[in-house]
Length: 93
Image (cartoon, rainbow, N blue to C red):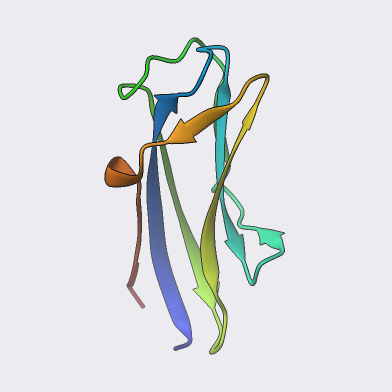
């Protein structure tokens, strides 16, 4: 449904083999376009199941638009703790 939406997400780091992983996240519109103001990265040291990244943005959507959360790592491999990762949105206008 067309309108103005508020979106947010939380990604929680879980160690794989190294705490050198650098967690990144972003919200993406229609599978290709990074949503303005929605990208973030934690570049300092990570602590397994304690380091978290929060994202939030507002967007005007048209009917049929989709929004997705994408998370990646650089410098080393890591995991996102599935039971503590969230993605939400609500229509505000």
